[in-house]
Image (cartoon, rainbow, N blue to C red; front, top):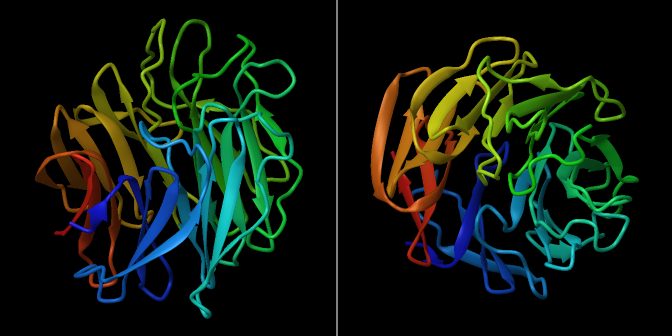
Amino acid sequence: MIASGQQPQITIDPTGIQRIIYGKEDKIYCATSVDNGISFPDIQLIGEVSDMHLGMSRGPQVASSKNYTLVTAMDKSGGIHSFQLNHQSGEWLQTAQVNDMPGMAPEGLMSITADENDNFYAVWLDIRHDKHNKICFASTTNQGKTWSENKIVYQSPDNTVCECCKPNIAASQANVAIMFRNWLNGSRDLYLLQSDDKGASFNHPVKLGNGTWKLNGCPMDGGGLVVNADNEVSTVWQREGKIFYAMPNEPEKQIGTGRNCSLADAESPIITWQDGKQLKVKAINQGTTYDLGEGSFLKAIRTDDDKILCVWENEGEIIFQKL
């Protein structure tokens, strides 16, 4: 166990340092490991966000680049706050607010990512202009000191995207990919947006998988995606209680049953998910599936010694295990 808390996220920087970010009430913490995930002795208070969203995939988000780690957190009034860690100084600083219109992100669902050159990208559900949820994007080239003008990159012709599913984002070089659950013609399917110019423009959204999910309700399950060095996108998501792994324009492959799935390591993908109360980890290239016992909101990364480091939430505690 690391500490009491909720909604852990995990990241690894190019030097191999792992950081677990989690929330407790209105406070955000960072637990750091410098021994490939064997221990997390150093826990820092990052900052505090009054009335912070926390729970059901709503909680602090994290991404690491070569020289910086950024954390974002959302308050229930619809503001998105950002915090920066300079890897050299080891100090956390609160930086600029991400959204440029206050009160427009009340759902509390967002993701962030970083490229190799200390550029960071964010995506979230935003209700600006018409009170319907849309996919909104912003970036920062100065590690959160300022954020770009917010841009709506997708709006459903059926008024709203899925209201309670977290959008996801990944980047490699100039390529940025966004995955979100749409609400189109009565279906709640996953769609992919891609940019090859660091988010200056995005292509027309592409539906993932061949099947569809007619559903009058929100599954509250956004999945995950990664982009590898060859700019190939891999995704994982849930449909009708089944977990699918898919690449754009290819048939989906079922890998299990359950919900709350995520994906890590673009070069050697790791899928995590929850089947009932049981936590599962699957290394795609090795074909190996691990059972971790009970818990929820499992995340994983691959460490520099080629092991899988897992972190999850269980009865108000942050648990980690190295496989």
